[in-house]
Length: 199
Image (cartoon, rainbow, N blue to C red):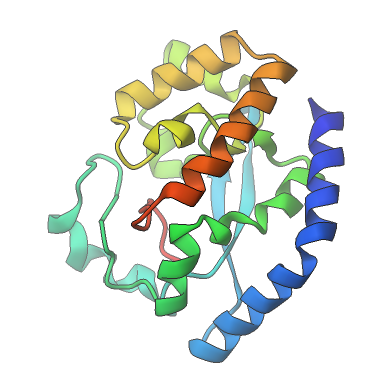
């Protein structure tokens, strides 16, 4: 799994380098703030790591999170459709999951895998115990079974079960199938995903 991750992530970074530069310039030229957003997530064996994304929200977006609590559609997690904090470029990036591309660096560093369970923030991680924590037996993924099922629509209880089944039945062939299925899923999306982040 690790060798597959390094090989594919390295190839993708080389092939996508021009696109990554263009996205970085677009973010820098259209809104104040850093190009990359870093957020602490819980990784393999429960260890924290700093996950990378392209910034898709206005600077200081976390300060406005409290004002949006009544719009949350996935309590106890935080998911707001059409989040008003999202920039114009950010909406485009989220619609095609392009904001996730910097995580290829996380894959090369060993913090993440190309395929695996959804990486949770600390507040979400505290919701799980017992068998549910077996999701941490593998590294969190850039994509996974929850992604191709429609991550914004999968209830949190079902998500944990899906992650558990993935870990219990993992194979390199399963990872390859999920990666292949991720491409048409991303291309077919018509509206931005929303997530528990303030980037």
